[in-house]
Image 1 (cartoon, helix red, strand yellow):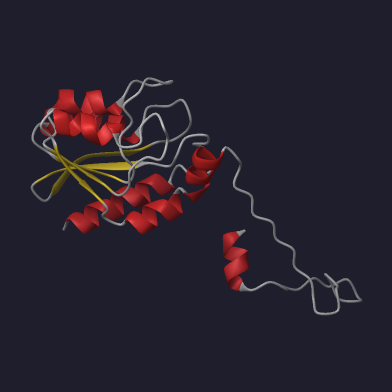
Image 2 (tube, rainbow, N blue to C red):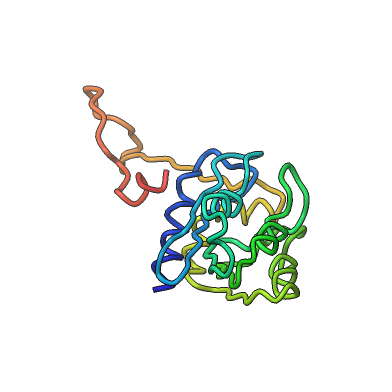
Length: 179
């Protein structure tokens, strides 16, 4: 069942695509028993984080709940306060993270802060999917360089259209999906 909740967090995170940079895409789902009591996603840079939205929607139901989030909660002040403090204050009992945050300001510290507060932490559910979802963020935060995809499509004879000017798909469906 926890797999389903992490999948839901990943789908929620996807809603922020194209609007969260330089932040990652994050989705959060708060669960009590088998029922979702709160959820959210990070809609844009500078806005509250996914965890904050989920906690707000859950209200008192967050106490003793389990949080599923596709990225380790932040533990530093930026444009928003640390998510770890809000999670601890809300009384969340357990946090499942798909992956640790590679940002040097977090990098395991969020998990450690939660564990020090007595919150059980689990890392690695759907990790590959989470890493793929935020590959641009991971690349930028670990290298300091933007993630760039270049695509050039041409026919075997070096053309991009027919002699009559008709355009046709030259690249395959995988390349069209990626770009």
